[in-house]
Image (cartoon, rainbow, N blue to C red):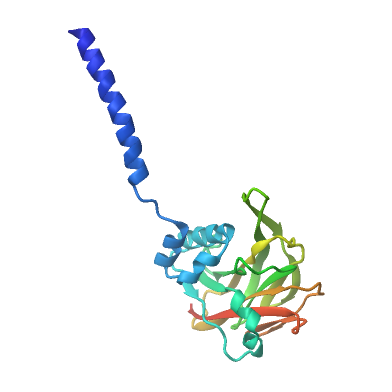
Amino acid sequence: MKIRRVILLCLSLILMFPLAAMANELEPSISKDAILIKAGYPQEISELNEIQKDEIIKFIKSHPDYTISTIENPNEDDYTIQSNSNLNTYLTVASSADYPNTSTSQYKDILVSGSLKANVNSKAVGAGAAWSGQWNIVRSFAYASWKTKNFLGVETSHTADSVLVDAAPQAGVTYSYDGVPSNGYYAGTSLLVTIKKPISSHGSFDVVGKQAYTTSSVNWSATISSTPGITFGPSDKVYQKAATQNVNY
């Protein structure tokens, strides 16, 4: 009798494991694209590389009061360049996660994300953020990311630190990276800036986030204005696209 119970137990375990495995296979997993679209980003967010998607998901999970903008500034002539349709730019602003407000200061984090579409190659990529309201820069850093594919079709993701192009106190920062390989695609830049202002100050301020790329070897330059605005140069060789946002504080 004991032997029969053991046999029945073994058979039930054998039957259970395939069913459990099948259940796991059938259970739908939530993709990064679905998470980002549910968070409010447009369908085009799927065109970003996986590294940038991870960065944005990490940001919105740690910044519950985030706001998103993908609105292009129609007043800048560089948006008439056809090649800008190859570039996506996303601007996300929130109260800082690493710098909580104190009795004297309030902090905001600005994330500028974006990348080229898969079929577009570039020699270099850049990004910048600018703002009004005389917020002081606490920190800023940026890195480039892209994908490559070997002869077997296996994709590899790459990152590299971007270099500061220019910074203007209380106005903005810009970065670039010049080492994207010829077989690199989905190239783009992630830029994070933390800014601060006295806690007693209230109102709203404007933020501009910009992505840029070039297919030529150039010496990057940038003009940062307090309106706010960013123009990468040389303007005839650097394609650029911005998103703008008005933020209450």
